[in-house]
Image (cartoon, rainbow, N blue to C red):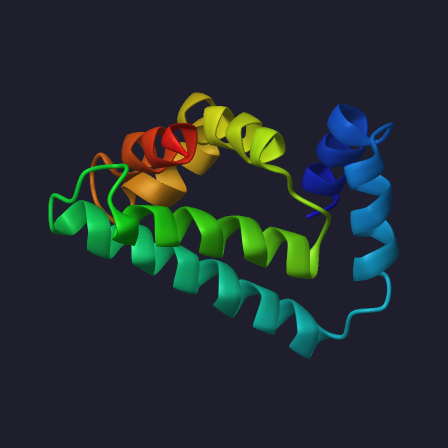
Length: 120
């Protein structure tokens, strides 16, 4: 866990999003972190539904997933703009850990999430 914290601090430690996230999460209990995970998983399940039903990336259901994803980040961590979310989407297909998270659900989901986020 400390390895990941160090990586995050090195990569984004000088950003407003990092500072905002640190301020918010410093006050969280374990239960709060669990609730944040539930919200993020709910957004992921919306992507799984849209992808699994072969819905276009710009369909209302896919875009509902995009909004749920961005809203969960904003609610629990930092103000996530559309542009910030698009940068995250790049990381989801470029960083093997994030790609594995999505593709571990359904093969090809990482690319779909990326494409749906880019389509907004």
